[in-house]
Image 1 (cartoon, one colour):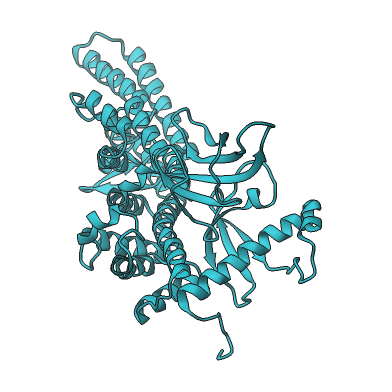
Image 2 (cartoon, helix red, strand yellow; image 1 turned 180 degrees about the vertical axis):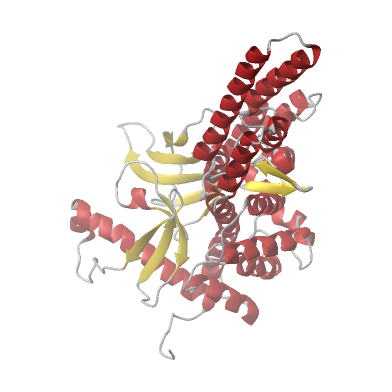
Length: 487
């Protein structure tokens, strides 16, 4: 039987037994933080007044009976409303008492995203002037994170400050926390925390893969066997990335890249090198998140799991707070222009990925410049210009840019199924799968000019290029081709 129904049946028996004070005491405790609590407090005051008037003899017996029946009926109505509208809300026990966890309640000191907001707004202040200004303004406000209007502003700053797609996903996590409680909410919330953690690792790892690939195209390099083994495990994974494997790859790959060329990794990682070891706070957070990941499909999750996921994600993102100083862009197309007697120039049409300070998502822009850029590519960069950037494609792609569709559809490489010419990407907006299969649209005798004249064949050509680039990157990094002959 549902825990709420057990309690409401007991409360009805107590009302029938004239235990009204006890009923109101249970309801006040159970509904702490709920909109119904005010009704209970009013009835409790009325009942105390009735008892006092009865004791002093200032009320007629018949009038006292009518007033008491009115209070009993009101309590019964509250119990009925509790059973009807709050069946999906969990009952939590603390110190032998029952508490109902509603979106408005603050039992056990846990409110969705409060801890994450308080810690992250502080962690990102070295990289985000808006965060520093916010903290200056709330410095004298105690418990500002518990005040919704102030807390919401901090959440907004965090979402638009974090790099591109990570900021968007943090915004979604904040929105989940505000939703009404349902039986599925704990799982949805924990899944989103895990999703953000995995994509944060992948963003860093893919930037390293990309720069290492560029370096290996310039000069021959042989990576240590353990590094190649871990890279192969990520690129050839048949199930998708696991957090403990991503962490192991990061702590192995960083010193290798440092030995090859100190500019191959994100420079901020050097400052957090001490945390890239087993037994550190970051490593423990990864282990705890991995445990939650393993439990997702095995047993129902509870609010305590949400608190755990939020705490561990906060640790991880606090260490990765340097991502706030980066931006992402998706190059949609580049056109050439040279008016007579003028210098030639290019028009770049691109999407500034993420949320900006005006709440625009993936805002599309154009610039007129003499600089070139990689076409149909997702870029990671610092500052206001993406000319000095890391090209994340083919590990991160904008499917809509490749297929000439409106908006952006940012996808992260997930895995490569048994078929070598098929790649699986994850569309971050809704966690749906996007498969890219090599079609071989360009033959030896194909006229590329004719091919791109047809929109459909042009789309196929773009997607073929992604698969070809991925296979080239894989062969370069690992020194071999994917082979299933031994299976």
